[in-house]
Image (tube, rainbow, N blue to C red; front, side, top):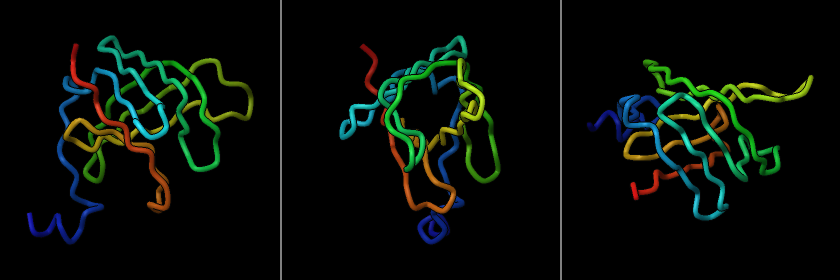
Length: 116
């Protein structure tokens, strides 16, 4: 555990794919993403990087376990030529997911809403 405190970037909580489906929200921006158990997702008012305006999009999601960071790959449907059609959403554990820049200069953390 001490190593995690020093090397935070390489020590993320393990995530179980079956725990991922649900609604995740950022209260500051109002952006949210719904990951459904059938592998589809719907995002509302989300920025996926520091250079994009909030947008609505949908598509398919797939979970990938990695030795560095577990992530959800979002395959965005109906994107035009020249637009990014796939984005990584990092699974942080503890009911949190995040879009983030590789150099750590920007991130948008979303927290899982309690089940109703």
